[in-house]
Length: 105
Image (cartoon, rainbow, N blue to C red):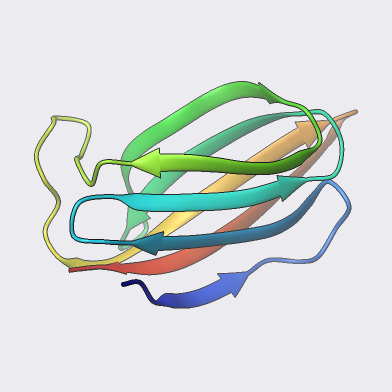
């Protein structure tokens, strides 16, 4: 089971949606890009980076899914708490960021 706590950010054509959910063993980060863009997804807790899931990935327009195994950059399982998925997309000199908060138990 999962619970989305928040979906924040301004609506725009480049990055139109973002959501995140988790189970006891993984998290799913979903987002939609309106045109081909370079994207990055990272996970934060208390404003600090926990792990970079993707960096400078080339995405074509459409819905995307990135999975996270709930491990930090050192390979340790994260403790329960509230995390934020930050999705950044850049295309044609324009950059947009969306965030989605989710609970890891």
